[in-house]
Length: 377
Image (cartoon, rainbow, N blue to C red; front, side, top):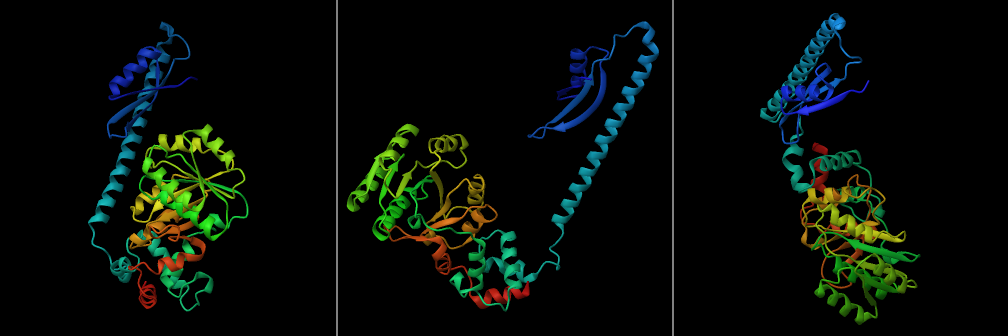
């Protein structure tokens, strides 16, 4: 049987469409009311062509089919009413819950003090950190975490890190991508300086952001000072050609144009330009951005699709919320942390410096405050 569904703003119009398409003797199988994304009502009628032409001798069958249609309509309407009633009860329950005052069952210490200890951190993440800390009370903090503060220790445990680009033993091609204004070009310069001056790596830089004359000037002036060559590329072919010129370099850094993180078409175009087997994509994020934005931006990239996350402007941030939000259950590691404009010094390997950076955050409370609050929870 070939069933067909007809949709219209009103049930009458949907029925007419079904009869017009399938004939006046079409068999109505189901009727359902739905809503569009904007909330408008829509009606769906599912029908099928009668299995054989009707004649006068079919009058008895016609009668029974009509009865069947009526029963089907009755059942559909009853199901719709029952569904609406369940929805009504759910909404009433939600409204009642929202209107009720906060009960004493929720820990008072958490509800009144948690924001002072982990300012701006998503409540679910903060609650998890508190629970983990409570379960570890009395246990020594491992030296490998680089801190004696249990707040910092729990955050360090929760943010996955990986080694910096300048510690690689193999040739690496790394493209830095991210929104406009997060500091990609400055980070490229810092990475190049650290790799070349501090770790004796041969480095080449390719810029896809050539239309930004100021950025190219910044790159070239720094590169000339330490003997790093810069190539400009405008598309996939010229990028590949520039990479071939740097084939003997230990580290090739690609500076990319800033993107609107919500413009997926533009982002797809950039990723297509960078789509070579040996090109890693490293997402640069500003620690001063909104936590919700960073969570969504990082979540837009599947686990394993990014080389790492690089955080900038940590010196301007007063909370660890952004790093936690971007890394929590995302599957992405943090490789580098930037905390100033000094080139090349203000970039650090995350795996060795995360605790040190977090201890500078002024809103993270002391060990005793966190311990007492965790005990109260």
